[in-house]
Structures are given as structure tokens and as C-alpha cells.
Length: 548
Image (cartoon, rainbow, N blue to C red; front, side):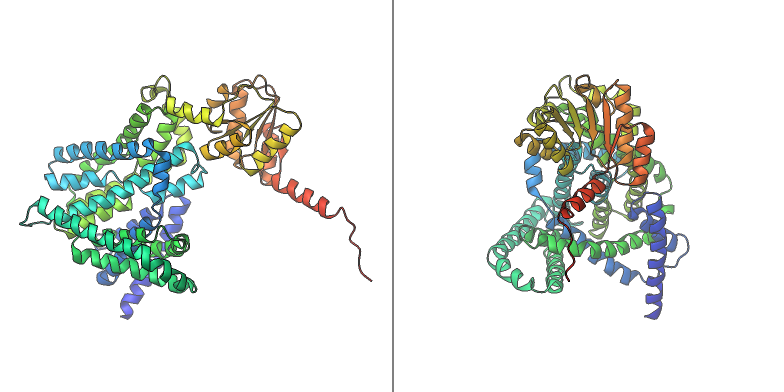
């Protein structure tokens, strides 16, 4: 027992070190953890021997992953985005599966293995994409919201795929149709039972448990693992059972409290899944399959974004929006690996498929991370060749702009219509200035329009966008955006488009203020300092009289 403890301690220390290196390289931790598993496994150093213990922790981690996906499933987002999320999500899944299947068959795979691999190529990592978009502050942009919509469609699709392929038992004598019908009946019965619990039991039980946050968390884990166990017993897999458990609590007022407490535990336990995965991989079995991995990786990195761009272009979005949204599907996800692992456990496919998909995952996750981080530079480099992915009139994106209120003249153009930008615009309007606001969050634009502020959908990082603005009439362009690099890029774009008025930009540190001043900005705004000075002056209007 002591040796197992020592082994796990060593793996955790090495993983922490590798994770630190990955963060420095701006890589997702999943890449570092799989690499640690490969190095510590039999393929290299042979340190990992506690396979049973690591496998148990890994299974619980996968259970919590699916549980949290079900818990966070926001069907309203798909509904609000309407046709684009569903069409892009379903279209990308269908075309990626079709082309991936044909590529896999061309490399000599069996029909079932080719189907598994092709489906695995369709799933993108919601965790990684949300993190990258959040870091870039693009989660509320038009392309960010569309990406979230079709990522949710993918999450639903992976669960449905697990249900269908669980029905296809290797060696089953009843036939696929009979097995699928039996599985469908069991899932329907489970959903009906869960619906009764959601209606009559959880509303009374959860408030009692919520008196103790620790007890609420314990119940959530117990409920997730219980339905995962039931799912395996009933034949529709632990993963589907865990997803249903999370979904059953998604409509309760406690979902956020449960989710926030579970995320860290989920990530910790998933560490063991990726370690176990890396330790079990035998890349020597790939052999000639390395070329297959290269071709499939190129297909995911290039083909998937092109599929999304084609669908979004057809639906009436500009090529830039399609390009930025398309980059979010330029990698496969942890679900892809879990999906293939499930196929192995069901006896449908061999271990070589897992090695292949994992290698594709390592390559695509590593490269796509940099593609998303440097998406603006990449777009500028390839935009001249993307004309085929945009209609002559991108009517759907133009509708977003018109709903926001595209007005033609302004004395002041304000980039960034958050709380600070919105308040600034209102104050300028009260002083008689004509104001045009610019933001890339459709909901923010709608809120501004309701307040009577003229706004237009646009991205400060888009170097072409300023030519659509009434720069010749504007006396000032103001950026309330906090990112120094975006402000410098906007400054450069305004100059290249011949803006002759004055420019004011916000800075959140003295260092950034110095860089903006050196770059030639006419007025540097310091929102936090200015607000603190105003508050101090207001408080100090009355003299402080000392008693006694």
C-alpha cells in the first residue's frame, strides 16, 4: 500500500511540474498530463504500476465530467441562437463524420473502427475553448456565442452517440435494431423516473441538504455515481447515466453551487484519466498508422474550420465571423478519447484506435491552441483567400447590426459598451454630443439600443472595420477596452484609415498608460484612478471633525 501512495505522490509532483511548463507554453493541461503518462508508463520509464487504483480514480473523474456537462447543459442558449447553432453544430458533425469515415476507410480500417474514429473527430473541447475565449475576452462576441451554441450541440451529440453505440453490443444476437430499441426503452424509463424525482422529490430534498454545502456536494457525487452505475447495469453505459444525473439537477436553483464545487474535483480526478491513458498507450503499435494520424490531424486542423466556415457563410455570416468560429473546432476533445475508450470496453474496436485518436488529440489540441490565441493575425494572413466563404450580402450578420442600430453620423465613437462605456456615452449625449457605440456582444448592443444609444456591431481587433465607421465626421474615438494590445492595434487601424480627429483610450495600469502616451494617444483614461479620485473628493466634501 505504501508503494502505491509513493507512486501517486511522485506522479502528482511530476504532473504539477509538467503543468507549470504547459502554462508557460500557453498549452492546455491535458497535453501535459498525457505526456506525463506516456513518459511514466511502460513505453518509456515504466514507473506506473498502480493501474487498478489509477483506473478507479479515472473512472470517477469521467463520471464527474459527464455529470457536470449535464448539470451545465443550457438548452436556452441553443434556442436563443436559433438556426445557426443547430445548423452549424449538426452540419459540422455530419460532414466531419462523413469525410472522416471515408479517410479512415481509405487507410484500411474496418467499417466499425472507421465509424468510431470519424465520430471522435467531430467533438471539440468545450473546456479548452471556453477557457481560451474567456482569456481573450471573446466569450460574448458573436463568434464566441455561436461557438458555444454548436459546442452544446456537440455535447448532446456525444451522449446520443454513446447511447446508440452502447446498443450495438459486440457479438449480440438480437440485431442492432432490437438492441437499440431495448436501450431506447431503458433510457426512456430512466428519464421518466428522473422526471418524477425532479418534480416531487428534489424540490423537498435539496433545500434540506443545502443547509450544509458539504452534504449537498456529497449528495451530488453520490447521485452521479449511482446513476452511472445504474447506466452500466442497464446497458447504456456509465457515461450516459452520469450525464442524466447532472441533467436532472440542471433546472434546480442549486446547480451553480454544485457545479462550482465540483469543477476542481473533476479536474483533479481527470488528471488520473489522462495519466492512465498515457501510461497505457503503445505508440509502437501505430507503425504505418503515423501517416494516418498526420492526415487526420490535418483534416481536423484545416477541414473542420472550412466546414464551419462554409455553413456559416451559406447562412449569411461574414467570412471573419465564420473563420473565428471555425477555429474553435480545429481540435478534438477529451470526449473523443473517452468515446474511443468506451468502444474498446464494449469490444467494438481495438487498442490501436485509442493510440491513433490520442495522437491526433495531442497534435490538434497543441496546434489549435496557438491558432485561437493568434486568430487575428492568422485571419489577416489568409483573409484574401476566404472570399468564397462569404455571400455578396451577409444578410444574417447584417441583421445583427441593424437590430443593434447602425447609425451614420457621430461626434464621438466609443469602442466597448460595458458599464464604463455605456455611462460615458450617456454623459456625452447629455452634453449634446452625437455618440456611436461599438461592441461585439449582441446582448450589450440590444441593451444600449433600448436606452436610445446608437450602436453598431464591431470588433476592435478587426483592422478593416474602421472603414465602415463615420470617421470623417467624428471628432473623437474613445476606447474603454482594458487590453493594451487591442488598443494599440485599434490605434494603428485608425491611423491607416486616415482618422484625423483625437483619440482617447483607457489604461488599467501606469505601465499601459505610458505605452499609450508614447504611441501618441491624445488622452489616456484611468477608469479606476479617476473613479477613486471622484469618490475621495465626494467623501471629503464634508469636513472631518474630530470629536473632543
